[in-house]
Length: 110
Length: 272
Image (cartoon, rainbow over all chains, first blue to last red; front, side, top):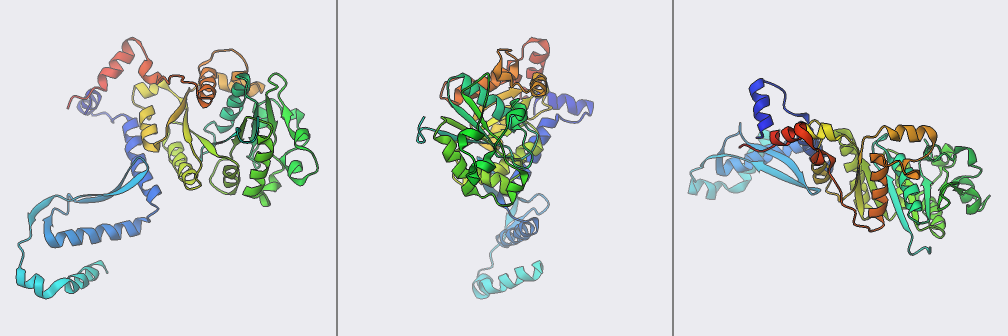
């Protein structure tokens, strides 16, 4: 935070627009460059969260999967705060395996 | 002055109205004044204006169209600048040419021009459609012009993507219509912000300058005289850097002196 940001905050003023411009541009360019349509991105986001959620308990409110871009390289950035690891149930994972979990994932998606 | 040593430089922006044609005219004159034979090609067949900015609109007899059709020689179509004989314009043809013009045609014209000139500047049309692709085909390197505004930067990014995929390089950036005061008060994207986002080397910084309008009214590019207006200096510096001279780039928003500027900088210091 800069001195100006602090003063703006204290006076209840809008922050300087250059910073807003930069952030909006970064976001829109990450999408432009990836050429992913928003629906597909949203689907991917949900599926990633589901997969991660199988292994660790994550804070879905705070969780964020988004595109970021630097030096013309677009990256998928996931910021998923972990509440705690899921206590593994050895027999269940061994017995049920992936197929069941997969079908579960598809079911929630549809 | 052989074809091998010629440089074919596309001047493009994506968005319209950011200063492509003004840069082409001023850069052309500046290069010519530095002693380089230079041709400017108006590749904006739909909305041609390069002739007007150079003050050559009344001297056009033939255009690229007749050259391509073989109904005139290239020399007949090239309009030589009176005050700066090192510079010539190849005017754009009829807008209806867009219906049949192909990238190969533009490449053919540029190659012909390159046999006679060291620098071939190609003024691209706005947009990323056929006209732009034709112009791009004629170039081996590019200058992307943008202003510090979100729409211009976004469109520039699209164009850079296309240039990259076509293997046009180097691609350099000219940041146009910079307002140092607004940058200093953080109400305009900073120079570093734009170069970081677009990831291009900066070839020039041009301040917003009312003299640009005066010069276009007259059809006399600023670089033609020794007015020393900020934009004239900036355009000349772009020409010098293009020729390989090491001319330092000065960020005008960081150069500002006086109490207000100092307070502005103090306000930007990080406190936590």
